[in-house]
Length: 269
Image (cartoon, rainbow, N blue to C red; front, side, top):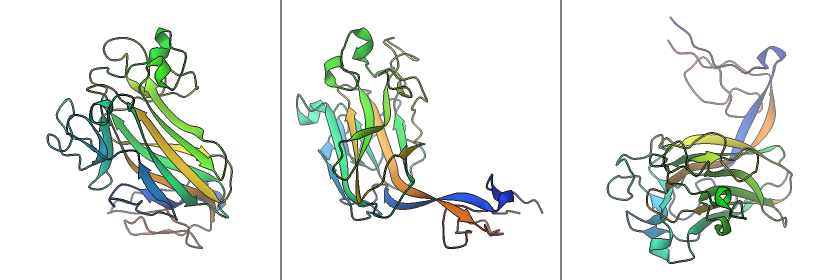
């Protein structure tokens, strides 16, 4: 019998770290987050056609949304995602940027917060403009005629802070230029991981503590092929997990004393 073990790097010391999600939205519920933690979900719009849209989507291609090439996004967490393309066509000039805001997420008594989210985009035709590198003055706004996906957070009455940003990488008319990548150094030009049609998880730490948390995503898309999607947004508290217990079944069940979750030592045969 062959056994495959997933272990914590600090298992020898008897301590690991577990992420305990207390907020989750993978858009399976039509109007509210799936695990709300007291929060609400407020999209700026939810509609459009299959060619230009900002909406909760079944990811059916062709049909509910369009993609080029005509294949759906991969690695969904459930039956729904949130997706967009060419926002100003259905919602009018000046509405190129659309947003979703999650408010009143209860974080009272919690520390070491961590955000996780799954992101995807069409980079096949290099459609994502970055006006900053052609003389624009605003790294993350319409002044520079940029396209972007930005996630921000705010705790209590604080202003929003940027959490993760995806923006065009260059001015070339075809890949690898004008692809949507993470901006890892805050200069307004994508330089990190490139998004593709597979919904891929990104993780960022949330600095600070308080009583309530807000999360906001802002996406600017003003043309065809500027297609993007998100799925499975979560906020977790990263906690120390002492005295890990070996779970000999193929399972993701809790294996930490005290009920901490998301750490497992599983075997398969």
